[in-house]
Length: 427
Image 1 (tube, rainbow, N blue to C red):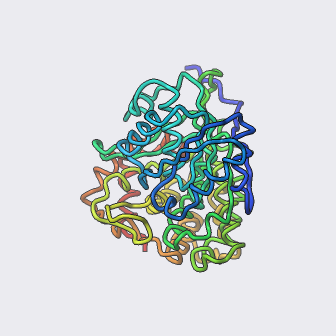
Image 2 (image 1 turned 90 degrees about the vertical axis):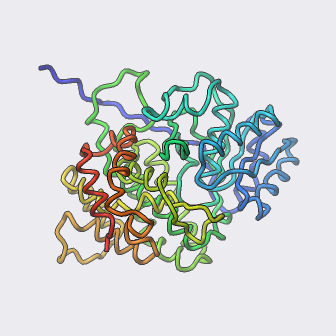
Image 3 (image 1 turned 90 degrees about the horizontal axis):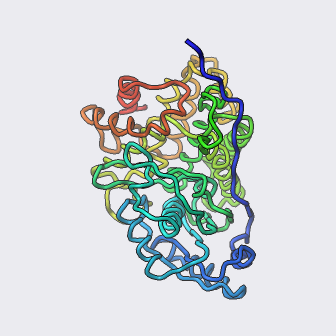
């Protein structure tokens, strides 16, 4: 038997980045420099109520850029909510640029709008297989400026758009290099009003982005690809490692403080940096088991709702869903790269007394200590799941093959069931 040639090439992509207090006031200039004259601003009702999207739209006038605001984004988007946004854009277009103002929900909705107003077809044509057809866009997309108002998703850096497919009760996504925003405008001032629960949940998304990309299978472990086969998620590599390590170090000093004291401008700024850095890391290396598990946890929720999130419908916020199986997922993957799991734990909790912990238990312990301190539920049991739900959760996770392929160990259905079972109660 001949062995395939191992991969020797990795790719790295990122948006242009403008970072700092006041950066959001310059979007009109940035759009004009991109040649835009008519822009669609995509946001959600909660952010719209603050007046921020309208202020961004108003500032564009000084640069002869006209804006239309769509404020109907659904927090934790669905296929239905994204189709409604696309329909609005088609009816009120044409546009020559799109500006997303909000959290990952707004940025991901803007990516879908951009895709489906420049390319033929429906969402299902582009959703990752096996849920959708996994087609690649044939045409270039419009310039997209992403302006995050939460510290978490890293959506301003990535090629991924995530949504719930309501009829299938599954969360999945679209991934293609053309979805990556043209420019990320990260202004820490916009994040000062994040409630503690949102800061905690979205912060766990940052943390898992950094941890999963750092522990992803290395790019050299894949078979050699032809140029046309290359995808944005190429496995752990030296550049994504650098961003992930820096993100973990920033979280170590700022995460608990940002949740406990939202007025701490230094902690908020460090969280904004961490979100950006982790996004630049995982947007190229990829994420794996905790994110694959999170999709069915969020997609099959029955009655859980976090008070700090808008509306009353049942919802497990994405970052929280990712975190709930992370300790046990990293306990499972430890064997594949012990030194990386240990280094990640030490970056996240410098000075932690390791003398009482088995090496395999160190990262899970550091994670559960943090989760307890910032008010994350103590496992999937606290968001409404029982052991009887595990077969359905495993089925949903197994549909996320794009993510599971990035794991340093390839989990079986039995492996995933064990991770879910041990995650019913984490402490």
